[in-house]
Image 1: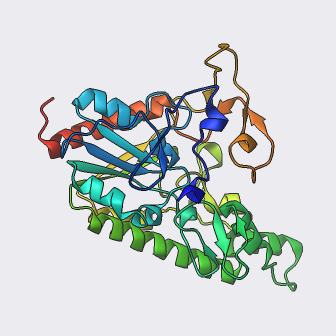
Image 2 (image 1 turned 30 degrees about the vertical axis):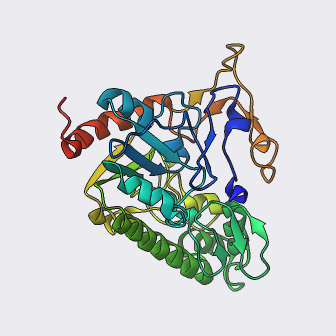
Length: 319
């Protein structure tokens, strides 16, 4: 089970926040702590990725909700996870089904498998043809580079073809990936027997692929980052529409409040310098001092504010 640990984030982020990581006895996986003091049947389980985990956030939304509702919230956010990851661990689903409810984050589509790459439900894939492991970003860049524009197209049309039409094989694999993501989300929600609150938590709206002045609504193919869009990568409105009906409730948190977030060294009070290679050796050495990717602490408050009344309704907890 230990090979699952692509990222616990603690080695990278320790100067900013202590995640109090612990190892789950059921699976051998490591999650953000402290370990839950969950009483039988009296807890809420949170399934998700780094956004649920709460990178660079001292008090992520599961902890905020725990304080507000006065019951344990078990944070099972796992770096790079997609719905297929949690399907591989029925022990976690069984645990969730013994609780009161589940908050299920809308997770990234780039953590999904297809006929070319096997992801295991994580954002680190294995090329099926030769079993080489690589990041999802490298994998999709490889796919895009493998199909150049038709040679007969002049340069301006070739650029437009790459941006708006895309390589046929890439379009085929992308459609397959999205179909698998939809199927796995539905299956996961079917296996959960307690109320499921489906949480869309992002800086972008689901029908837009980016944020700010450079946002676009169409699918692009000119680079892997343009194709992915902001988190949750590859997920569009159609995918949400085809999965949210399987949940008992849906919460939409589209916020960029407090983003980008300045990162402060908790020991010195000075700007922190974060190096991704301290966490993932496959990532390049590059340092930064602000968080412009993961939800900011203010965004976690926004998510908790939207989730709280929905949870109170399902749990029968008065304000």
